[in-house]
Structure formats: structure tokens, C-alpha cells
Image (tube, rainbow, N blue to C red; front, top):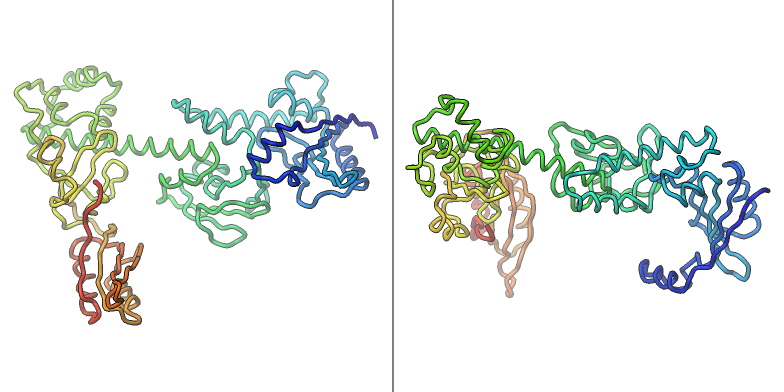
Length: 477
């Protein structure tokens, strides 16, 4: 068999680094001796593999076929680990000359060699796709691009199947969300659930070799910031961030337009009556390209609507410290531009007030929220009167504390009462007093409005073992 064989012995420092990085003992380092076999064509690669396996026994689980399934960056080789003479483990890589050139010189290596035949066309296509994926990850943030490339450049890969039998290479630790974005951006942006080997699994489930993965999509679902905590591929991370930035800007622009309109109406000015020249000069004065950019800045809290209105109307007599006298109506589901504070968890029916937080948009608090008392008195211009706009179907998280007598089955009774009142339980925890006479149950439940919450509490008060019910408030703003 015509072949070139190259050998090397791993240096002491390389052995030390591998043991430290991968938490291995010395006996677990199997590539102290390594050989590379370079042959003429792909069939000969497998013939060489067979010859080696007949000469020395392979280590189970240490064979990888990157020829049939190349890595995302175009790398191809057969990898195997053998138990060599005197029981010494030996790592062997088998590849063709073209594969060797790509591995040594990089993904563009095949453009440097003139003697390559038409069989390299497939490699060129794979290389082009990989380079294209790098271009898709580019953003205005160079640090973010570098982070994404670091993740995707040389990943340890797992191989999974689509429902149609197509093999896809994913980095080790990749989740179903990573897979969804690898299929198509729209699939990733609207993935609502996933099936692995025909069984429903959470979206954060990590993929394993040989998994059959199916993504369930819904147009009502959009990327969640939580996805960023568990996705592994640069492509998925980049697409999620891009979507969230775009959505935040769009929602902030709509909120900013509403805030400016409200400010103008409170001054007795109908926005449509303002001449086009005034709007144009406002955009130029703020250093923006479009009016949409001005609205976005207002919605993100970078500019106060009262100041923008004063400039638009060229009325210097207007005080920028005076909050608007009009009230803004919200649904509570506007998205990232309007957020409900975690400290007081307002729900429809609660008296509420809004705060413009720079870079984050508007945060809604209850009027009696302890976390905002100091800010309301020291910075009144940042607060806007807000009211709920009636809407059916939306549910809001709320925390309640229930004190019960420590008897058997009481938790089931309380949970049943919450369910019968049409509420969902999102989370529950419990604490017992030292004498074990009472138990404190802490629930996070979902309700539609204040009357719904009152109905849930009434249902629990009918249980004899319930001694006290309190709606929890407090925490950080």
C-alpha cells in the first residue's frame, strides 16, 4: 500500500497541559505517540485503517470518522487509537494528500494547490459554507464576533440526524436551540418545543451522538433572553442577540412615539399639526438619521419626552422637570420596551406608575412600592402616570404567602383551590416553624387581574387549615 507515514512524540509540557486542561491522569493520555498516514485517495484511507486494526487492537470508543462526516471547518481525517507494542497507546490519523493540505494550511488551502482534481469541489463548497457562516455572525461588536468565532472554530462535535435523515455536525454541548438555528434562522426564532428520538424534551436539552432531532415551531414564539444562557454555537448566540436588539429597538420606538405624543397633547398640541420642517430640524438637532431613531432614544430612556417636546415646539418656557399631566395606558405585554418590576409585581387593577430607566425603557411599579419611594421624591421628572388598558387572556406572575396548620394533605388542598380559581402555579416552596405546628407556603401564581387574585384568596380562605394569606411585596427595583 503506497503511503507516507509521519510520527511524533508528545512533549512533556504538552502532556502536562493536556492532563491539566482535561483533568486526566497520566495513564489516560492516549496520544503520547502519534502517527499520521497520508495516502492517495479515500478508499485507501479505509484500507489503511483495516490494516492497522488487524495489526493492533483499537481502543473502543476512540475511532472517529471525519472523512464521511467532515468537521464544520472542512477538516477531514480518520482518527483511531491503538494498543501498540508493550501495551502502549498510539494515536493514528489517516488522510489523503488534499485533506492533509487543508489540515496543515487552513480552510483556504485548496486554492493554493494546482494539482487538485474535480474531487475537491465538494471541499470547496463546504469551506465556502463555513466562511459564509462566519460572515453571518459578524456584528458591529467586534468582541462579540471574536467570542462567536472562538466557540465555532474547532469544536468537539456530535453528529445528529434531522427527521429526513440528514446528518448535522454540532459542537459538543449544543442544545436543541442550537440545532434549530443550524437548520434555519426562522426555525430558531420560532422554536417552541423539541423532540429527541420522538420524545418531547426541554429546549435546553444537550444533544448526543446519533440523536434524531425534530423542532416544533410556532409563530407566536420569539427568542427568549434566557436562551443565551445555554446555547453553545456562535450562530445561535448571534441570531438571538440580533433579534432581541431589533425587537427592543422596534418596541422602544413605538413606546417613544406614544410618550412624545402624550407630552404634546398635554401641551395642547396635536402632533399632526406640527410642520414637517420642525420634525426635520428635531432629527438633525439630535444627531439622528431618522425620526424613528429619536423615538427609540425616548423609549429607551436616553431622552426625556418633555425635553424633546420643548425643542420640537421651540418653547423654552416649558420646564423639563415637570412630569406630564396625562396618563399612559398599557397592556402589560408590550415586550421588552415596557417591563413589570420584579419587586412589587404589579397586575391589572393595581394603581401603577412608570419609570423611564436609561437604556432599558419603562419599568412599571405599584404606587405603594417601597423600592421606589426615594426615587419618586428626588427625581419626579422620570416618573409617568400609567394605567391599565383592559385586555383579556394575559396572565401575570404574583407572589403570595400562605400560613397553614401542619396537617396531612394541606398542600394538595391549597393547590386544588388555586387551580379551581383558574390560576396556574409557577413555583412553590415551604418552611416549617421549629415546633412544626405551622407551615409557611410560598407560591408564585399567575392571575389575570386584581379581582382574579382576590377570587384565588377567597377560595383558599374556605380551607379550615389556612390561617393567613399575604400578597408578597418588596425586593430590589
